[in-house]
Image (tube, rainbow, N blue to C red):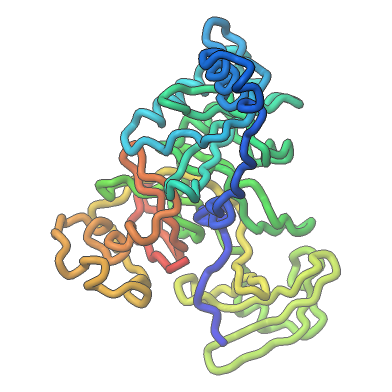
Amino acid sequence: MKKRTMIAILMSAVMLVSCAKAEPEAEPEDETTATTTVEETTAETTVAETEATTRPTTAATTTAEPTPTTAAVSETKPDPVDEGSLHYDMFMAKVDEIEASASGEYTYAIRSIYNYETRDYYCVLVAFRADEITSYAIFDGEMVVYEEEDLSSDEIDYSHTYDEIKLMPCLFDTRLTSLQLTEEGTDWNAAVGIADSIGDGTYFGGLVALSDDGTRALIEVGEIISFDREMILSMSEGDSIGYGDFVIDEIYINGEYVQVNLASEMYGYEFHLTDHDEADPSKLYLCGDSEAWCMTNMVLVEVPVSPDCVESDTYMYVYDADEIGYNDREITGNPITDSYFWCCLDHRQFGPYNNGWYIAGAVIEPVTIQNGEVTQIHLGFR
C-alpha cells in the first residue's frame, strides 16, 4: 500500500510531541503526617506544620545564586497555565535570574503536564547544572522551587541553552525528540535543537504552535533522507546505496509506485526507499517499516506566515464541518485562520493557550519557506 502519511516526529506532544507527556498522572498518596498530632497541638501549630510538609518553599530571590535544594512534593499541583502572558513572563524572568547567577553554566527545559483532576495543564521549569537539577513551578501566583517525583537526570539531554529557551514565544513542552539516522547508526530519541531562523526550502515535520492571529508558526522540521530515483532503480539486489551499510534487498514496482526494501546489520530495523506524494518525484525517500520517514537536521523554529500562504489540510476527513463551526466561521482573509484546521484547534490542542499562542499538533507534509516566510503548508492529522 502506498505510504502517504508522515507519522512520528514528536514525542512530547506534536508529538510536538507529545501524547505521552500529556498522560494523566497517578493519584498522589494521601498525606497523613500533618494530622497525626492534632489533639496534641494548637490549631496554629497544626496549620504551620501542614504547610511545611505540603507546600514548596519560595525560591531564593535575595541572592544571585538560585536555591539548589528542592522542597517537599506538594499534595496539590501547580497553578494551571495562565491564558495571558503572566506565567510566560514569570518563567522567562526566572530563567534570567538563574542565568545571571552563573552565566553559561545552566541549560533549561520546560515540562507541560496535564492535570487529570482539573483537566488543564501546568508547566514546570527545570534548570540543569552539572549534577544539580532544580525545578520551579507557580503556586498561588508565586514562582517556587518544586520537587518532581518523576524527573530523571537523563532529561538534561533534551534541555536547551539560555539563548535557545529565550527564543520560545510561549509555554509548551520543550523536550522534543525525533527519530534521526546518520551514516553511523540510528538515534531513536534525538534531541531537537532550537534555531533562530531557517533557510529557504521544503521541509517536513510537525506543527507545535500557532499565534492567535495566524501570522506566525512554531514548527519542528527537517529534511527526509533522500536518494536519486534513477540511480537507485539502476542498481541490483545486493548493491550498496552509499549510506551506512544499507544494501538493496528487493525492488518492487507497481505502476508508478516504487518500494526498494533495504537490508542492514548496523541499523537493526527494517527500512525501505519509496516515493512521497508531496515531495520531489525525482527522489526516493528513506522510510521505516512503521511508515515513519527518516529525518535529518531537525530544528524547532518560529517563522512568520506569508499573507499569501497556501494552506491545505486533511482535517475535513476527521471532523464534521458543522461540528467545528466551519460553515459559520468569520472570514478574516488570513489563510491560516480561515482554514479548516483552524476551526479544529479547540478539538486538537496539545497544551495550554498562553501568551497569544495556541499549542497545536499536526503533521507537516510539507512546508515551503521562501524569503524566510511560510508560503505553503500542508497539515496532516496526527
